[in-house]
Image (spheres, helix red, strand yellow):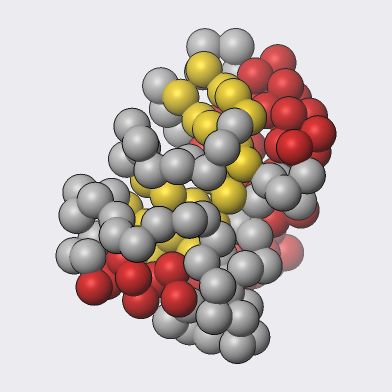
Length: 133
């Protein structure tokens, strides 16, 4: 489940699709943008069931937040939940704050979490490799 179909969300959708998941659901507050991204990813990776739809953790193994919700003092969650399944891996692309409201909830529920700084560190390493390798 990918939340956010803007620039970061689009890049994450493409990266996830390259890993060949069985399915990918994309949500954005702009439903047309989510549908357009889903169609683009589905054309590029026809073996993956890519859909645009409601933000949910039902049938999800991974929850990826690429929306700005939770950034810089925003106390909201990017989806309407009170709890998360313990088996869910929760990733938040937001760098500041390092512990977003979504990650705080995920940690409280016992989920495995991945912080935005980890994504940023991976990007920096790849940029250095690109320019200096």
